[in-house]
Image 1: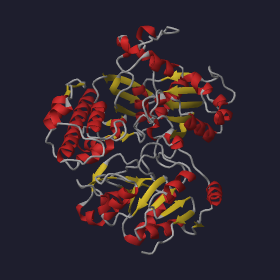
Image 2: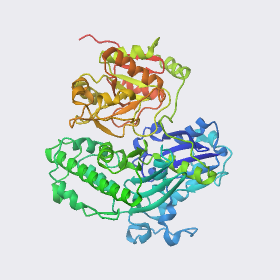
Image 3: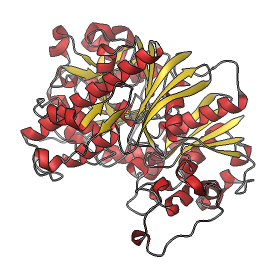
Image 4: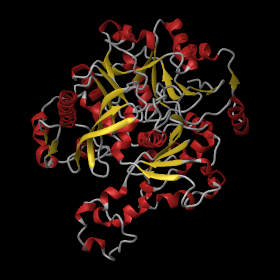
Length: 577
């Protein structure tokens, strides 16, 4: 049974293909369109279906849309329609702003937006770009597939639990908002997810973080990770303000009071202007308040259920500092965080949920121990493009050793290998790699990527060596937790040590990605250090590269020293001073 999962609401539109409970493919639409997070500055763009991502998933499965049995869309518009759920049509006022919005739709929703989502099954066929029609053959607006709308936070919860290593767990989802829920508490057992409770809009920890992100001069729903990095440079000067804003009850619920940020903290920072100490302190205070609130929610959830395992998803679960605080100070013995925790991951969650409901298997067979679910290009395809582009290249005889030698000479490498990662983290398939041995490497990488100076870069470490370099480090394949760099190792890997002494690590074993593992091992042989800098293969404003063309364009339009794409190496000519 084939199930196609789709996320096409809010941001990070994506598609996923599941066959009998196994995820075959998953990818974000931005990787094909180059529109980061899938948000265009035109009306209704958020609700466009991810046609290119869907096309890739069908191609990877070797099927057409006519072969799909079920479609799972990670949003249920009917939850907002109230008494109008059964209406065949709803009259739109000529002047919408002159008419009150029905209470069940809330301020952000009107019939036009809801109708766009309700009509998604028709858009899937009628709206597909002409060059994709072949993959969509044999279908009409009604199927043959059966269409399922899946509640947004249920899709998040399913994405967190169903691919996890746990047979049972409590599930916490935190994001900006779904249809109504902004936070949900669930219990996962076998193939089922039971909702225990939820917090509804407008009270939202995710939206609060977004609002402060915007106040600090960054892009809301895109740059929250920058605020997390900024927080390490600040002090908790405004912690009492955020404690007043976030009020956590004893029953797992919380409220967000009116923020009045300008009244509390002064005028907002203009985008691109100089950062002041108060900006660092605001970020730091916000981060601490978020951690305190989520810890309180976790304590309540643990006390209410008696469970010792926790699964996390939702955009807030991409906050690796928060995750580490939960790991170290929270009540749960084991945690698993969905690597595509943001809205892209709801395509996976919706597909796995609908598949589990329809097939009702006795046990779960899928475990997400890697995120390499995106497109791959074989050697012939890569070489054909390189020849067409008339670029000088060579085939490496001993790829891992040759590239390790380049890295040991402080060369910065674009690394393009095998299937692309699903989710926001580059994990060794579409990465920029560098040596961690010198502190100035962080500044070099930020300059290459045109990033802010305060942004850290992250390490990848051999799984068996992790605890020798990072305090109490355990398996962490998705870069979703920070660990303290061991003091005795700090001077050996200064490029990846953040100002607060932590690093957001990725661990790698050979089963997950043999070539990537062998490269780090070869670097260890040369330097004694089983660690590399690993950052995403992109530059500012661009998503992570997907195709050989993307990789070559990024290489030649940035100061990267070399591109390693499949078995081929491209180097820029040396320029004598």
